[in-house]
Image: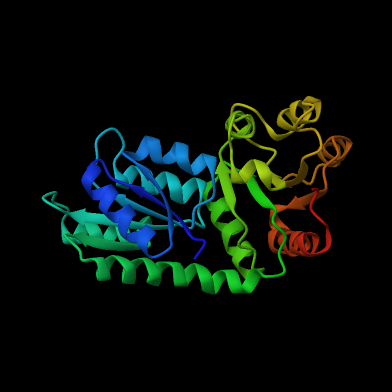
Length: 269
């Protein structure tokens, strides 16, 4: 099936059972014991689905799922509830709207697990059918404003762009991601950065300047995405070898151009 699934549960028996069942149906699985371990695995490679227990020590499934929604918005998530751990029905309903794609209530049967997984992955399959012509680029969006992030997601959806996408809030977080020792899938596929100029801690032009000085990152494709129509900002940005300057007031037109770019440009080998 070539679907890679991350199984996260602090109970070793549960994560082994879930993993074994999925493996018997030809899914590939990776196991982690808590939310922090799950984030490490997510950083290493690409997953089609995260199945996580909700109540765990250190970082629970709720916090994990919110982080996943923020950093990997295309990743589907199933929350496992019950098993002697109490999560109210009303709480489950709210969480379903905010961060989880679906839920499984423990104890669940093998059939219930597989049906639940197939239903969630079918959502991804329908989305992926829309993007057969898209290249294997993935995106790093450097944007601290949640409203603007949602606008980007809507524009991506309208243009049928479902490439893997990472979200960070500032230049420092971006460099933490870019300099990660082992990014697995993400280090093997070409990157496009969408960069806001007005950022906390390290602004967009400062980030670009440092990026172009880094011998390993200097050729990265960058599109600036900003409210600034200032000619000086445009001059400075283009002088730092950006691929395009997108005004947020014309965001959808900019993303349409980006979609054309994806369909036209051959990614580097």
